[in-house]
Length: 133
Length: 201
Image 1: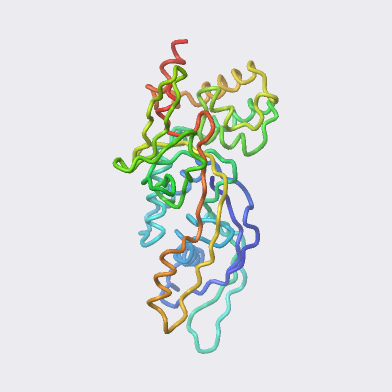
Image 2: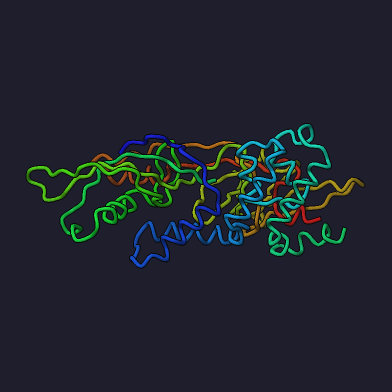
């Protein structure tokens, strides 16, 4: 076996979940390692926000995030684990204080909130404070 | 967190699978070979994504199986350095906090990468962040097993695990068991990282 290119493309959690579900739902019986790893991976991904995402709202969200000059990995993290606080944005985006103004951070949060509102619903105790603000 | 890797392989299809469509037979063989395995310097293989090209199959004298050169793309778990991931604490020890993602267990957050100052509590077998409340007293934040934790990936390590040489099978079997083919190192010493419950409000 030969590896042609170890990193041909990056996948979002959503794409992986959809693909694995397709494998699981296909009529063929899978056994052994494939069954184990798909089961475990699906179980992990189903506990992440990607289970409520759709390809349309991911695309729309990326379009709206385009003006902020984020790089690919930063956008990927925003999609995989949509941030709900400015603190999370600070973690995901390198030197965010210099690259984004406070206002822009607010805008990014609003965009995320608009396309992935279920992030808030999923962890209500975590976001109550922000909602009432 | 997940990537697509392109690989090439000459896949052997044994005669009992000739009843299947060639594509299905090859997909099955590739998944049997790679699923849930670590490929050196690539990552943990999850499942076949798609087959890109199939070349003419051939047979060898004395073997009833067909061999098909195939290029394909595989879904691989390989978080990039600096990526933020969320996992669950599996256990704690003097070496640090062991984190699991469910399908991948070999993640360690060493003591030097925990929130400062942290101490290991021997009776509870858990790390404790002695959070300074600002008025001179401190608040103990325990990192119990099973809690969700957000961490940054800071390093990755691949280890070659060779098959054992015949003869000293038993010995080398033990060596292999101790060797982890792919492990990640994490850190939580930044605001916002650590147990999700720490940063609720």
